[in-house]
Length: 358
Image 1 (cartoon, one colour):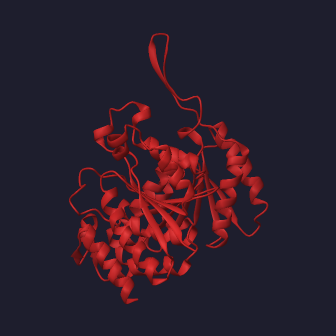
Image 2: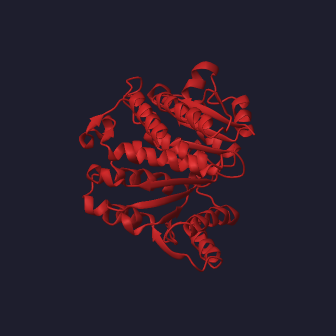
Image 3: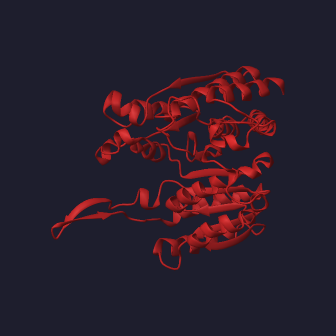
């Protein structure tokens, strides 16, 4: 039975890295006789330029009917002064909401060959292998009321940090289920000493933990967690947290690997899963064929694992990435730690060649 994957290259380097992902998807489809059909659509700034809207209803419908969505990146300074409803990021938020993508998985692995690439000492990052489980459709990014209004003659900006028990329950169970397949430790991150939403978060997590007696649960305030990620990152297995905290902490954790260009993600929920690199559109290097596509290719591996139900394909891609890095190849963002620096397209070709030789 055929599978359908929607490609949303987006803006900036998103176009370049998704192009390399297409090579891998096409090869894996043929190798394992999977009959994967891909189709590309505009999203973000590219859609604004073409259609004056961050993402069209028809594109959302195509994504909802697909087996998986691969997103490059959206945004850039070209659209920074647009009104709120005409910002490229609105496409991303709508995709998360309409697809019901409440569970964001961001694995952070320090490859042995890249220990020296981290800004931290090699002995600090040695063996780091953690998973950030981020709630994706609640909190400050979606809570109401929201907006800029005028009060007593001056502008006031309002964002609402809101969580319901059911939202906390489902992401907590996702984190505990993930931990069962790992080292069986969950660190729940909140700000329960100050925020009412965090107090409800902690109360709910404690209750759900009773259903998982084999999991070691600890609670950590977000400011302490930010410090501990630098001080002793190997202590973490699964980090469970809300939307904004997860956004910030996962970007911090990405730098443990030496570059945010190395971090993939999977957004899962009620239907179609969406996969994307954690990095942004990087307009300063767009079109130069120097962006690192490895986070996107690792996201493709997650896509095969979680949405296309093909663990062997996922493992093959991850092994190829590891083998290429072990052989000393990398891109410009990691050039100080590479025997040979490859362009975006050359890295895609190198991963593809390694897959074929496996």
